[in-house]
Amino acid sequence: QQQVKQSPQSLIVQKGGISIINCAYENTAFDYFPWYQQFPGKGPALLIAIRPDVSEKKEGRFTISFNKSAKQFSLHIMDSQPGDSATYFCAASRTGTASKLTFGTGTRLQVTL
Amino acid sequence: EAGVAQSPRYKIIEKRQSVAFWCNPISGHATLYWYQQILGQGPKLLIQFQNNGVVDDSQLPKDRFSAERLKGVDSTLKIQPAKLEDSAVYLCASSFYRGAVLVDEQFFGPGTRLTVL
Image (cartoon, rainbow over all chains, first blue to last red; front, side):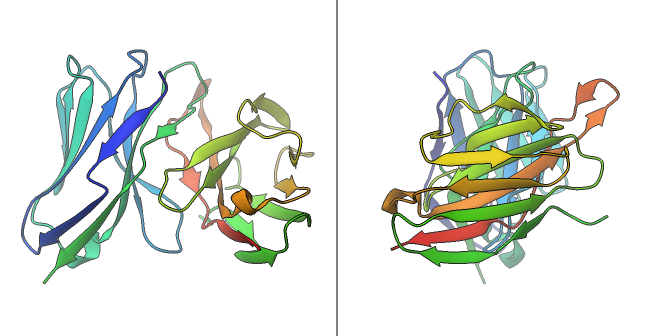
């Protein structure tokens, strides 16, 4: 019930292309869905987040699409750059649980020249 | 603004030995989290503190893991005795209250990579 499933496990995209990472959740009580970006040797850092009252949120080249009925959300990276090469984690939490995050298993993104 | 500090960055120990990790959260952050990140997996919450009180330790293996945050600022996570399966990166994160509401964003430190041989 608390699981967040993430795919793909790894992704190789050419510079300028679109990177798409998908996540699915089971617990319908989740109401906060962040994406964290992690570079080697660093801790995760919040990239972008969404709540279920909207179906899409865009910040620069990063967009979250949210499908409440399917219990799925995805991260789109437009015009992918080599500097975007990192591991991306989706997560979910429920208001009132003191922001306890359940993370996906991560996607290692490599953007090639 | 200084970020979350953790030490040591790396630790190698033999199984059955003990080890301790230290975390200093961002100044003013009342909430502190310890996560375990096994290679190839997402971070898993071990324990959450609000000031010096435990909010959630449901996933902490209490037979071998302990954590404290005595003065509501820095925190120590201990493993005694360590097992091979404890090899992981241990991440500390912190967050703050905006008024009466805990902000959703968590700020992570660089982690301590533990190898148990």
